[in-house]
Image (cartoon, rainbow, N blue to C red; front, side):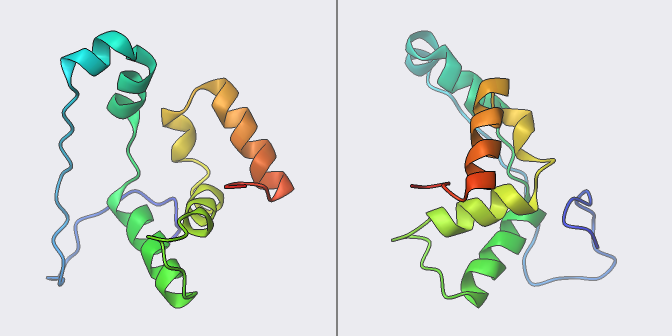
Amino acid sequence: MSVDEPERTPAEACAYETIPVHKGINSTLRAELPEVAKFLELIDVGNHPITVTAAWAVDNGIDVESNPAPAAEYYLKTFPLKWPRWVSGDAAKRLEAALAAGTVGT
């Protein structure tokens, strides 16, 4: 399975159910920071990508609570078709440059 393959319903039962994520945005946030509200509306990290990223972090001894940057960089590099959907064009260009330079999270 490709890491960019769309999520699917398994043919057999699994230990963890795939559940939808519901987002709520405070009206004050929407009024005062519309760009943040728009980002929150668009963001969709995906169940499969986040599971793959979490497994990578565990396999590589990454403590994502104290040092999330390596996992974030892994996600951004591994799922290049996912995150550009929810960042601005300018932010995507900056992230791509940081990924190429190895400076994500620095």
